Image 1 (cartoon, rainbow, N blue to C red):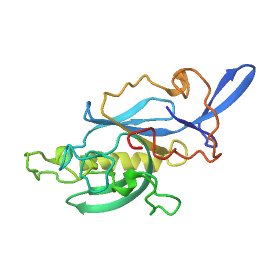
Image 2 (image 1 turned 90 degrees about the vertical axis):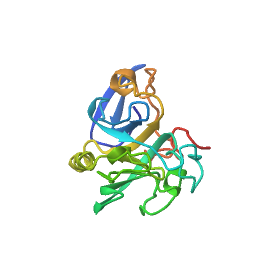
Image 3 (image 1 turned 180 degrees about the vertical axis):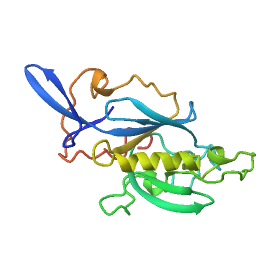
Amino acid sequence: MRTRFGYKTFYEIARNGLIWVVTTMAELVFSREDGTMYLVDGDGNVVESWDAANNTTIPDGDPCTVGSNGPAPNGEWPIGRIADTGDSRSNGPHFIQVGDSGESGTERNDIARQRGIGIHGGREGEPDGHGRTGHEHNTDGCIRMENDDVDELVDWMGDHADDDAVESITIQDESFNQNEGGPDGGGSGEGEPPLPPDDGGGSVPNPGDGGCD
C-alpha cells in the first residue's frame, strides 16, 4: 500500500530508535484477471469488491496512445473528479476521472487523463457487438462497472472523504494479492519505513507506477 503524510489515519513504525508516523489512505485496485474492482482501505483491508471490466473497442490498441481506443494503461494513477452523469446510457450514474487533472480538475497531465480514462457504469441491457451488456460492454478505454456498484463506490468515497480518502487506482493485468503492503508489510512491501515524498505534498507520482513512459 502506498503511504502519505499529513492525514488523520496513521500507524507508527519503530525503527532505529525513531518513531515514524505514517499515514494511510484508501485506494482502488482493478485486476483484469479477476474481472474485479477492489476497494482497499488505509489499513490494507479489502472492504468491498465489484465486477468490473476493461473490454475495449480495439483490444490490441496501444494503452499509451491518445485515440487508440485500447485498454486503460497499467500502473498507479490519481483519482480525480467525480461527475454525476444521471441516466447516461454510456456512463450510467457517475464518471470517476482517472489520471492527473491538476488543481483545477480540468488539466490533462498524464496519458490516463489525456485519453479520458475513467470508471463508470452504463449499457445495462444493451449488448455490444459481442453480445456483452452491463460492466462487460466495451468502452474506448474506460473501466466499466454495474450502475448500482458505481453508486455504492461513490457513496463510500463521499462518506470517507475526510478520514480514508480514495486517492489512487492501480490498474493491473494480474490477479490482486490482498496480502501485499499495508501496515503489516510496510509501505514498500519489504518492511522498510517509507520516506516522505520528495515534493513534500504527498501527491501521486506521474505517471503512476508504470504502464507508459
